[in-house]
Structure formats: C-alpha cells, structure tokens
Image 1 (cartoon, rainbow, N blue to C red):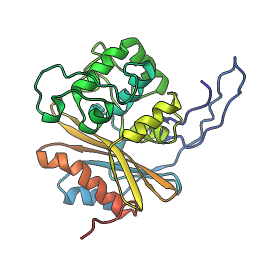
Image 2 (image 1 turned 90 degrees about the horizontal axis):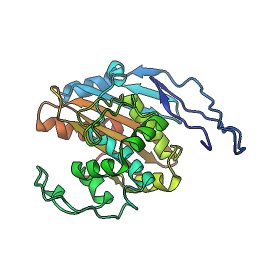
Image 3 (image 1 turned 30 degrees about the horizontal axis):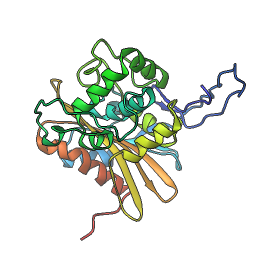
Image 4 (image 1 turned 135 degrees about the horizontal axis):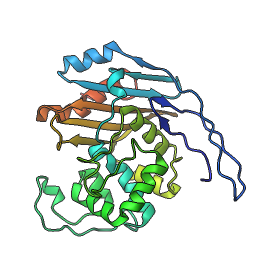
Length: 282
C-alpha cells in the first residue's frame, strides 16, 4: 500500500496516521494511536425513548475529539450491514471494472420487485439513490468472490466474512459490522484514504444520497435488515458544516413502517440538537 490507512479496530477510532516509507519495495508503516473514549449520552437515549425507538445513535466529531453514543453497548454490537453495504459495493464495482463508471447502465432482468423504481434499467447513480438490491447483486457477481473477499480483507471491513453467497452475504449471510466501524469506514471514505483509487472514492462520495442547504451538507446511506427474525435499520454518513465534518451511525430496531422513517428523523433531530444541521424552515 502506498500510504497508511485510518481504520477502526475494535471499538477504538484511529484518528491519526503517519505515512510510511515511499520506496518501491517498502510497505507503509501504520502508526496506531489510541482513539477517543466512547462516552454515553443519556439525553440522546431519552430522545430515542421518547420517539419509541430502540437503538443507538453514534456521533464522532473529530475537531472536538468527542465520540458519543446514546447506547454505548449497542454501538459496539455487530450487525448485518444490509443496504449500507452498497457504499462498499460501489467502490469494489468501480475498482474491479464490474462497471466502467457510475453511468454504465445495467439492464433490468424483468423480474418485478416490491419497489417500482427498481423495475427498470439503471446505472449506479440511480441504483444507490433508490437502494436497488438486484443492481448491487449483479455487480457483486461481476466482481466475483475472490475480488470481493480481497477488498473486504484489505479494507478490514467489519468481520470480513463473505461466505459462499456472493449476492446475499450482506443481506442474510455472515458479514457483520458495528456502528463504530461504520463511522470509521465513512470517515476514511470522506477523507479519501481507503485503499481504493482516489477517483473511485470521489465518485462514490459525489453520488451518495443526501440533503443540503447554504450552511450544511448531509450525506449518507440507509439500510434495513429484513431477512432476520428481529429486523433493524441503519442510517450512516457524515455532515459538513463550514470547515468541520462529523460522522454518524444510527442503528435501530424496526418493528413497523414508522420505525423505517425514524432512521432519518431521529438522526436529523440529534444532528440538529448538536448544531450540525438547522431546524426545518417554516
């Protein structure tokens, strides 16, 4: 590798790296430093409880060094990434040439699925915005098991377990990732220090769904694990305000369609409470 990577190991966020030797036959030396202490916010937990939500909201603010969660135990628990894996899958698809770029159209296979906007030809820009499952299953098949496992290991993504189902392992297989690890991955993508080509990281950042005003920009990816007994949902990403950036991960139990919406509303409420986004206008 040409440079060291800031990655999440266990529950410690590594927030400093030093470049290693630059000679052709030398690998980069990674400087691992102790990350910030994860602290629990009872007031955040109260907001989730008042919203009838069971789960955790984690916020990492590098400028202040604050790493906080409404439930620190759940922040360290590992879950299927579900559709949040589409961020990683996009990077692998571009890096391996499974698609030539974010505009390459993959033809719809003609199978009608539950979301009407899945049932047509589409490119990566559309597929990540619509969270089109079949599209990402196809590019995973194109990349292949060997390349997918290589990149899971190289990035140190979650527990790196792919198993023998190239098109399902992030939906119902053995792959697991914690909310803290989600934050570490999103921070590395934002800073463009993942071991993928920088141009591919910039592409995925550009097409990541989000919202913005003149004062802030929010980007992230949702997920919903529906092929498990106890369903849960994700919303992970970052918010930029001025020259500062914060990273967040929300993981909540899904018991009703109302909980699906709360992945976003709870996240935005807590980002608003902490001054990262503004209240909605009148």
